[in-house]
Length: 116
Image (cartoon, rainbow, N blue to C red; front, side, top):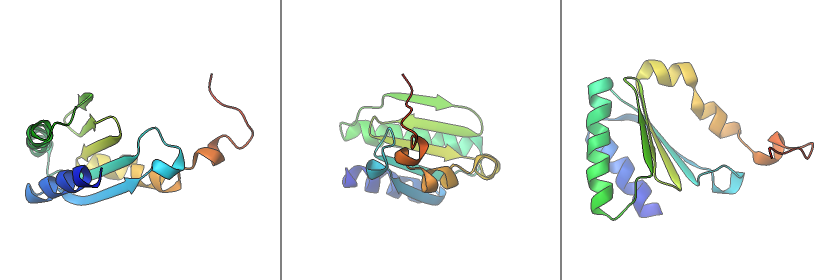
């Protein structure tokens, strides 16, 4: 796991991705173990980062379960890891770092209710 995270963050950094953050969500009951967020320099840069990551991860035998892509936000699903590549504007607007920092499954379902 750690090697995958290191590979992703190194590639993003080498390709000029900014403000790279890794969130270990494994102990928080989140649906993935890790979330990586990075800021792109724009839509073309995000697409280039995505292509670089796809090539490198497939070369390492990683399975990419899905990719959702817009001009401002790209999400890559690796099963146990999500990678978010966001323009500065979208990253500021959605501020998912705050959500991830504060996320705790037990707090969401403190009253015992869960989705069926």
